Image 1 (cartoon, protein in one colour):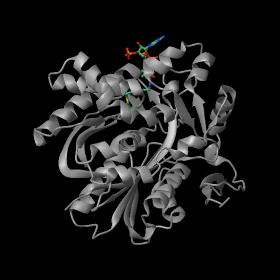
Image 2 (cartoon, rainbow, N blue to C red):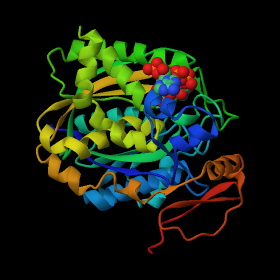
Image 3 (cartoon, protein in one colour):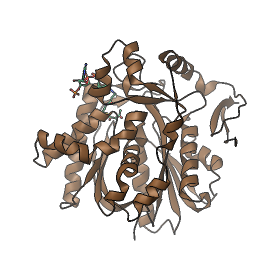
Length: 394
Ligand code: CAA
């Protein structure tokens, strides 16, 4: 049986911050952010754009652009590390906002940035095992990445949702159940205690843990898929430079030099970094935003070719696996207009961005307001229950 990614869609907040503006405000050379980290803009979520709203808007766009029907979904998994409730999963909010059927398994997964990939791999196994009985799976990755203002992590923030439809007739990327290498261990590289909105991170350790996990997962992948030729590689992208470091590392494991890795980077990796450089780190959705970026740029030329995928979640868990670009993916990916949501964004000043961040502290207890938003929006709480407005046609 074939199984894999049938469609994908991206949702981003309405606003973004130019990293050059942030660099000036923090008295840091612009080149450190733009070249040193490889980031240009980061999406900033406003008060009505919480992780539920971002997830719902990504999934609504997925249905609208791919022609998929909510009534055919039998499994809905949301991967997030910025959940909105200790008990109620974002998937339960989506169930109503998307009109999913009652005969549908819905839940949330967490393992830092790996949570979305865990959902995808589970969905692949669910379909491959026959449990899906012809139904499709919806996996939505949604996060708002926040570090302390003025910290080293600040330029590596971002926000967004990526919705993925998985089915037994994948129009984009065929995945191979079981042909995957995993790696896990207990490390304190990045974490977010229950009382905090902003993540804590040991930055340099987190880079090393990422590379160690990549080496472990890649070695495990090579044991199960020794001869697999990879024509492109998509990595988890906390910032663009990390993907360059990852590529050097993985090619070194293949016995290739740093110069060879750098020479192949423009062809094998750079096309997957265009959207992440405009959105920033979206944690669980990061790898899938890279894939969307690659498919938008090159799906037509990659049909029939295998690409490598690497997901890393701090703490840590990682997986290296591969997929083959489906026949017809080029035309279909074009029809999905993957980067269109980025075209309508508003540039924030640093002062506006800092005001939004101050408001985040009260967001989970703010009394619900009424509103008329063109997309699904978080309105605040009533009796400690989160309230959402479904999209209003404009
Ligand atoms: N011009 C050009 N480049 C410059 C420069 C300048 N003026 N000044 C510095 N640079 C370069 C540095 O040489 C460095 O490049 P290399 O890594 O190639 O050496 C790069 O800019 C960054 O400089 P620093 O290492 O000094 O940066 P920093 O210590 O201030 O912070 C960071 C970097 C640790 C990644 C920090 O942004 C951070 O903590 N980010 C959050 C954690 C993170 O993203 N970790 C990634 C792995 S963990 C993961 O992937 C999970 C996840 O999503 C969080």
